[in-house]
Image (tube, rainbow, N blue to C red; front, side):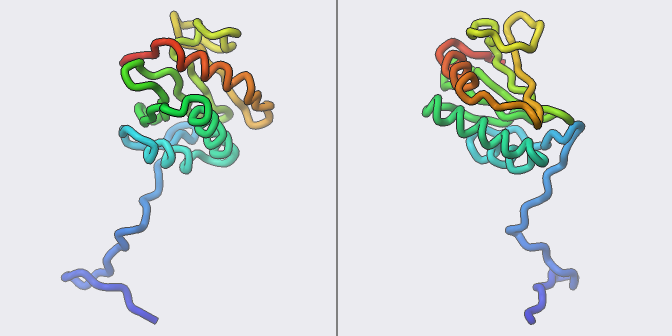
Length: 152
């Protein structure tokens, strides 16, 4: 049996390759630092609790398949999807009983996603027992990617 290496003060050192646990915020939303790229989005999805993780993986795969040159980031503890020079077209966020998928220019989509009362944004709340309509979601993603997105 090998002993853990000790620091100069005699305390065992922590392994550098251990991932820190992700803090879950209200409703189980993963707290992931703002960052651009696929890695922070994958970290967010991996930290999503329970059935929401599978849904996050399915949403991410659908967006990548539908919009091959998609740009990803985590902002405000949510994955964002967009196109270079066109802004963000979609984000999702974990809540206690559902995952909210927001289309930033959702009023331009047909059919218009059912949630929302703002000027442009519309969303759909996906619950554990909901049937995930992949064809409808892909249609919305395709439309959303084809129009100018949201520029924060």
